[in-house]
Length: 217
Image (cartoon, rainbow, N blue to C red; front, side):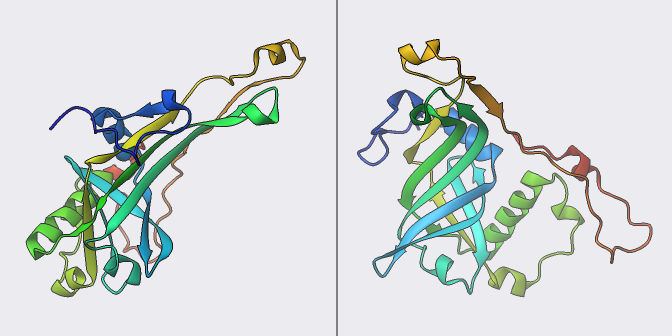
């Protein structure tokens, strides 16, 4: 396995080439920092995009959902596009044309596969939960067989795609820097709020440590 993904016709950046990054470490860092993703695919010639959660294990990304979902049933064995995006800030320039955003994103292409083995599926779902909240899965009621039957886990090898990153101040046209217009960056950060307990929690059930330890990358 090389340290970079190959540049293909559909993964190469047509514009803003300097923002593209095919390095696996850069791609992995963005995938690990943002669990929310969108999965695009085609059913009967029509495009669909499904928001869901993803997690990475080595050189693969995985996502899950209901086995009854028409979307997931139609993703197995077909070409999909998985995207992850993180908004880091708004960039205000001296012209409307050069306004932008600072962001990190990944777009992956490939054929989705279904995790068929029940034990493997169970292990992957456990790693998904523990990846967000270390140690939580072992605290939970064990999954029933019906839980596993009702859940589909799909995966994709990280073999084709790219990261796209923009950071820093606006890039105006040189004459515009002489204009008396404020320009700069407005940073955006995702903030984790205070935990809100379920009103049906049993008396004496304490808040687990992994809530306070939770962080986005």
